[in-house]
Image 1: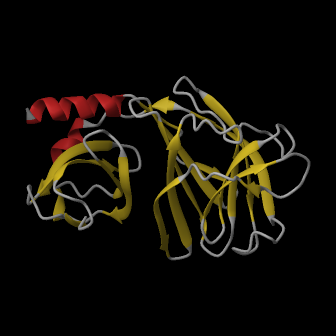
Image 2 (image 1 turned 120 degrees about the vertical axis):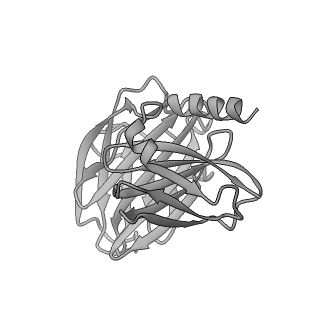
Amino acid sequence: MTYLLLACVAGAFAQTKSTGVKTIGSMTIKIDLNQATSLVTMTMTGPSTKWLCVGFNATTMSTNTPIDCLTYTTMVLDQRLTGGHNKAVTDAVNNLTLVSNTVAGTTRTVVVTRPFNTGDANDYTFSYALNSLNIIWAVGPSTNFATEHTTKGASSVTFTTVLGTQDFALSDALSTYPNPSDGSFFIGNSKGSKIETVNVYDSNARLLKALKVASAQAEIPIALPELPAGIYFLEIMTADDRSVKKIQIN
């Protein structure tokens, strides 16, 4: 039964595309598409003292009306550009789910999810068949969104299938213990690989939490006290490899 559950979740992971981390000015964006759950996960990083905005399916502020935007000011906002060079406005319905909002040093990392198709005409409709996407971006001088952007630009991202192709050498070098646990455990890292990020998924392959680790320690402590008892999966990522491990919380 446990083996079948692991196989099912691994299959769901294999149905995932990612842009990888794309640097745009002083910020980054990473977009992951999960075919099994029809969820898009967006990870945005940038200066913690500034507002950040990324617009989808556009090459200029007035390319389309509306242009769907993900914005961080002092909170995550589901916004749109309405044409011309006017500031983004907040949608009446927020279709973004905040997964995490963390600051390390002077860098903020915001992770959000939303359905491919929200049914909202103001939101861009993602598709797993998507291979590339034009984006625009802007960074403000502070977290006050009323202030004019200081930098802006246009770029594009390319989607490739990334999960289900894990490096087995990395997988063999990683372990989790104690397992089962009460939610506090270690990732054993016998080769000293620098672990950048640990994503936590439930048994339906839904992203629950994204942990910024940035550690090459032989034992990396992980604490998930907020999760109820159950089976979870860790996507453990280095800069160029990844491995999936199953954990049980009692």
